[in-house]
Length: 95
Image 1 (cartoon, rainbow, N blue to C red):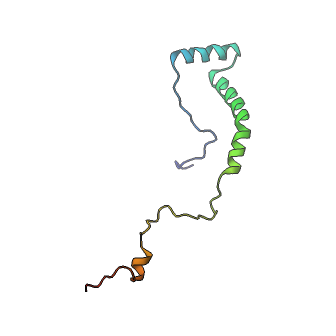
Image 2 (image 1 turned 120 degrees about the vertical axis):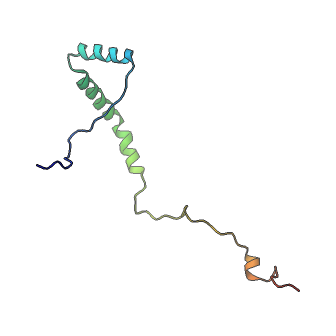
Image 3 (image 1 turned 135 degrees about the vertical axis):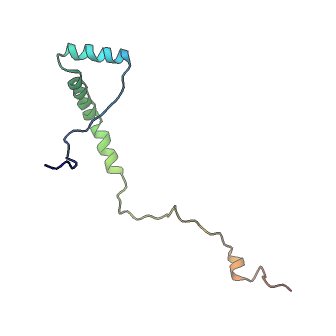
């Protein structure tokens, strides 16, 4: 097999804990008799299940890619005067 990029089933997440938080994590995981990694995953799943209704509502409210754009915010507007454009109020000729 070649050394090209392989699809991975899992993604790596890194975060830092204070010493007190780490000690508490170890105590909680030993109390439940599981590894700290499994403890974190277990409680993340519970948190995800609680947030799932909010996330689905948010997904429903997102604007689709192909929706008509009424305003082009990248366009630089040019200021003009109807009276000056028509030429009947301001004369450009010298008298």
